[in-house]
Image (spheres, rainbow, N blue to C red):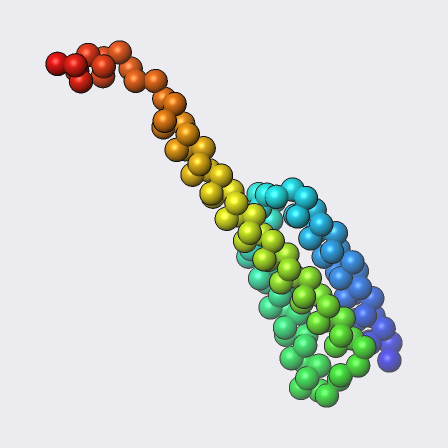
Length: 114
């Protein structure tokens, strides 16, 4: 009984931080401070915890906390990938704009006129 309570406390502490992280990532619209490897490792750990619950027929309240945490990590992963895509697209647009507005050096103008 006590191990279940301690497990739920641990999961609740992690679980409360994921929605905060999700809101931060949505507002920032940037993936610069997020790590796909870290989130993937956490997701793997949660999946291992759920697998342990399934194998021991431990479908209690802790199982549902694992599911909530997995949903939050998957949502964070999705937002991170979306933000990376936005950054990549914005970077390409900036590079294209820079190429269009780069002044031609005088030497290149002289060579092209000849």
